[in-house]
Image 1: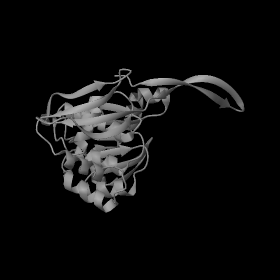
Image 2: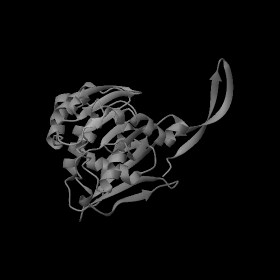
Image 3: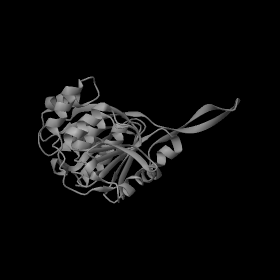
Image 4: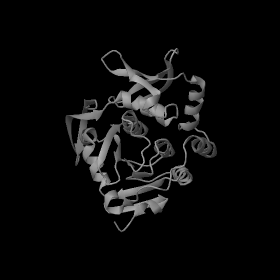
Length: 276
C-alpha cells in the first residue's frame, strides 16, 4: 500500500535566488481507534494523528502494544472494520475482539503508558507490570548484521524518499533480512503498524527479531517493543534516559547512533557479537 502524499506550492530559496515550485509532503490526518467486544458497542479508545495507510495494522498494533490484545487469537475475523468518511479516507477503525473487555481499564492503561506527563517512576512500574522480562536466551546478533540495518530500512522508506517527512520502523530477522517496514508521521504509529502486521500474521512475540527505527528511541518505543517481546531495538539516533532505564530493567538491548560502522550499546551488550 502506498502512503498518501500531496503536493503543496512553495517558495524555494537557493543562494539568495527564489523560485516557485510544487513539492510533495506527507499527509497527516486523525484516526479514531475503537474496540468492540461480543455484545458490546464500539468504544472509542484513542485518536492519533497519523499518515493514512495501513489503518488496520495501526489499530491492531496499538491495542496490542497497549496490552488489550495478546495475540491474533484475541481478534475476530475480519479483525478490523474500517469506516470511510468524506473523501474516502478510513479515518475511523474498529478492532473486533473475541471476548468482552473493560473499556474503563483500557482507558486508564492508555493514560498511564502514553506521553502525557506521568512521572518516570510510575511509567516504569506500569510497564514492568505489563511487559514480562525478555529472556536472555536466544540468538546473539552480529556486528556485521547491525551495521547493514540503517541502509536496508532507508531503502524501504519509499514515502520518506519523496517527502523527507516520515519516521519508519523495520522488523528484521537475526540475519538482517527485512520482514516488515512501515512509515508514518508519528514514530510510535510506525512501530504500531509494523508490530500490528507481525501480530496479525501470528508472528509475536518477536523472539530473535530486531526492531530498527529511523529516529531516536523514546520510552514509548521501548514500551511498545517490550510488549512485542523484541530483544533488540536499534536506532540511528539517541535513546532517552527513561528509555535506557526501561530497557535495562526489561532485559532489552538498545543500540543507538547506528551509523556506518559505528554504534553505541546502551543496555545488555551481551547480545551483540562484536567479532561476527
